[in-house]
Length: 254
Length: 304
Image 1 (spheres, one colour):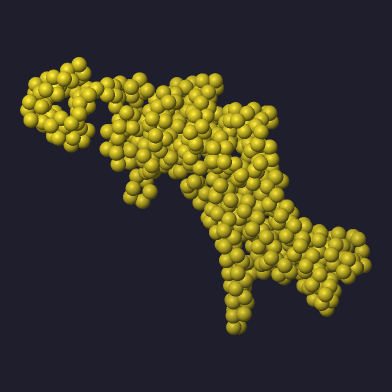
Image 2: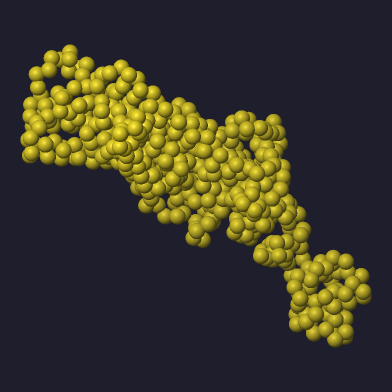
């Protein structure tokens, strides 16, 4: 398992794919800041930027699925997965090592957006006057909770990569999931009488969108909300992983 | 330590209703260069994929280095190097980077193994050139290097000369010979060209429509393709009957409606010709020749 993780790490560093994606993410974040500066209706202080990352969650998801497609699913296309399996490596370990690579990428993408937006909004509107201790609490709580919610995407997209077995199909499945999730959530929440609203709580996006209130500029720290968000996210991390491992164990590798 | 590197027992793989390999039982001993010969789609690659665990089996058993059972087999596979189907490479990485990944996965502690392996396959001077810019021959050699970096005892190569130019074919052949002689590797090499394999293989398995038609050593193959009288006549069946009646010929074969091979009494070619002519059979040609390897292969597989 450690040799597999080491090889994934080596590939992340040397393939330059993550570097390209981080460059794209940086450019997109700067454009968002520039757009906010140009409009200037609701100035965002740098200290609040960490909470604004979730605003571009859909775009982040596309960057993440692009990474998983070109990094994980590409191994099926180039047949390099064959070199790993023919050496007798355990298929569950292979899946988990790819998932860890995807989690590293999600963390790097999320951290980059956070840093770029914090610096960008600070330059555009100033940092704000939150005391250091409060800022550290606010930013770390925000960062780690939102990152945790977003890690569910790594697991889901890895499953798509092992199902699709090529970058194009993985990206298509990922975007399909993204759109489907938003449409279904909207349907549940807007159903007359809100009798289906509870069903929206079974999607990680529900917690990403409601964790921070941009107008009130407050975090949702309701313990029940946090607990439920963690359970749903854990389920989205574990279930695709278990399904992915089970399918991969029985699948053919070209 | 088992003298057998690989033993398969009734290996079968079914896709839908069709068997890609059907009850294939192969035995490969240490130090052999085993040539697996078959037409395209005969089941060579499926067999190799089954041995390396890339495809789940429908039935049968694989024994590697005397080990059977899922866990033991997985461990035994660490002693295998393979290049099956197309070269499996990271296209955006250099030759060194490709090998470094395989070195890490294989748990090879010696970093110097990369340069040494690249030298063995003649790719030590490729520098920063990415694998996607390599020629097919270079890709084949890099794939071979990827298989060698983990210092395997058993090397599985699927059509290693496919797509290579004549110079590349000679180089690959020499490399296989050297690996067997200098490193004592056991090789399983597939090809649809028997003539090509005959230049390196010590043993052969002929596979056709998923079934292993024949297993034989190089010496046995030489015996099978020994000298024979080749007769081209209008009616091969009648000619055969006459030869059996008058010469007591037993080892003869009508390879087609017009061609007959007699593998005995080589010195009586003239007499046979006279006999056939006097019985009204038009003999278009008669002479002593050796069976070409490809013809032997066709005679076993029916050519289709």
